[in-house]
Length: 369
Image 1: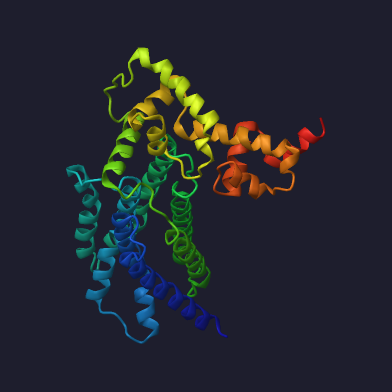
Image 2 (image 1 turned 90 degrees about the vertical axis):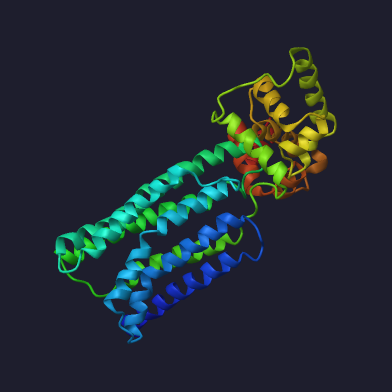
């Protein structure tokens, strides 16, 4: 098969896949992360426009200059929709603010230059440079926002593996890499040798697109659907993140040590940490205080966040299972689930972080004693 036909096939997969993918996310059949998926679906739809002109050309439907400018004009909004998708993944209760209007400054400048770019190669070059460079600050913002989110959710959840948005960090990294490669590729085409085949670049984007499809359709709801519970957890995150400056003493001094001992007793006797879905709200109900008070108790009484506090008990319980002769038939996956972990990956990662050994290494070291 000629290389040109392979490239056309890849383009069809790429454009068709992105378009279908965008409508799937916009429809959101699982009804999760509604606002985030709406903006992510729009991002995917605009992302597909980067290949529509190529598809039209090899279908012998050459686009008009006006249509081309229309396509270029909407492409500048692509990273903005991705950014606000991340914002709503992180905070489903987010409301647009006046400062968000600043996101439109670069597109407006771009649109003005695009209109004036006819028969002016210098302005056209600036327009193309803006189209590429405009993505980079948003990719950086997305990375830092998700990293901040990953730390904050440890305040409210004992299992962050499926809600840490790590796939979005990978997507941002891949987009950054492909942008750099694209710029290098275009410079090579301009100043060294004009290449007419882009099959390698298109295959790279094809990999990114279908990898993204796999992860976004698996993304579960990060916060409870119940609006009251969601608002409570988000407010606790903000308080612990320092975004709310005022700090109040939520538990009187005379009750603080009593509640601390009550929590320790609860963890040791009833073992609520064996529930893989244990979160701040569930544990606060068990100890009969509100979630704000429990977070305050953990921070000030144990100097730990919720994630570390709960998983510390899980790791200690797993250690007992690993060295107990009556549990020798259990596999590592079995021990992980018996200890309250929801996956072997989370078990290995957290166990090693807290003990500096993997579960297998710990078991082997004990057997050699």
